[in-house]
Length: 268
Image (cartoon, rainbow, N blue to C red):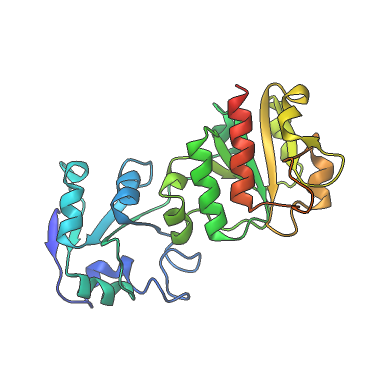
């Protein structure tokens, strides 16, 4: 289809991008169409290079020019409009100037997520979209092979998570552990030691973890604040903590995960 100029905010061809600030109508929410929405040229570029089937793009002409190489040879609908009309369609002014929408492919199985991974992150109750997106960005930067989501986690493909991850949620394999915590046994069967990250006394200092888990490691992280449940802690093979001075009891989950990811990558 190529380039299509849009000057009417009510044009039905851009309905996938409409009312992104209206919670009960948003196309990226479970009650909507379940679409994946990428914002900005960097994230849109990563979406175009991902396994997610892109449906269309909407943006101002300047941003399309920045993606000319990535879009060359595609027949995707490229809806070009003014910043004002785009704001009326989306529901707010978008500084990044371009959006893309994609469908969701079939979810990955646990075996597909961990197949080539030396380290994976396993999450319980991480419901904050920005924390989740930041964790995915850190996982990509520090060589974590995949992320598995336990109960209570938010949707990694929610627009805010995709944006905060800088599109890396589209690149880092992820799946769901529907059996909790029994699904951890599948990881053990694949050679993973399960290490729960917790500041509780008696846990192994992170720099010493490799003494107990020299091979593949699944790092468990809980929600910021409450942390891992007792059920998750009891299901782990090891409890591990980041050494910190007295009076500092915890870190933001994305920061704590980055420290743990780096320590394991440094040792291999």
